[in-house]
Amino acid sequence: EAQVTQNPRYLITVTGKKLTVTCSQNMNHEYMSWYRQDPGLGLRQIYYSMNVEVTDKGDVPEGYKVSRKEKRNFPLILESPSPNQTSLYFCASSPGQVLYEQYFGPGTRLTVT
Amino acid sequence: GENVEQHPSTLSVQEGDSAVIKCTYSDSASNYFPWYKQELGKRPQLIIDIRSNVGEKKDQRIAVTLNKTAKHFSLHITETQPEDSAVYFCAAAGAAGNKLTFGGGTRVLVKP
Image: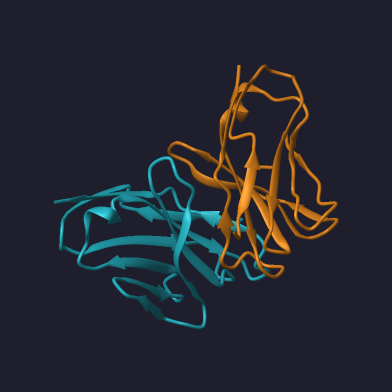
């Protein structure tokens, strides 16, 4: 089944404790992206990647890191999480090197206390 | 950068009526405009999209129109059904096709 998966789905952590949210797709898509969703603010793009080893900043990259060592995986890293990073996070992928026809993962709800 | 505004923020319609959601964007170079539907507790799902070389696109009960001169685009849902109740997001992507900016969302409630 073609899909985008994220792990974990729910995470409660404390300020400053490094964490990684994994994202994987099995559709051989080249484009992958991370978004955060906050009430009243809609979805905002954090980082995106058009291909292996190619990543770039979205609109809200501060406090996040990403890597793209393999085509199928695009982990989101929070080196020192803070309470303002409490949010719902979505990974997405698209065929080709642009974001047309994005498929979203199921989401990761992160709470930082 | 790109700025996308979406109106209204909430919309209540009677089953069978039409619903219209409007979005404006700021970057005249934007050339891809998707619409996503997000049901409660679920992921956003692409329902229709339009590219800048097309003025209108239709898929069954859903249609999108684009006015590049005025920099606005709209989603039209006809013959609404209770399962159309959800939050709808518009978005715009720049010419490079790599950055996507979303509107704030419209919560649609279809009353039976």
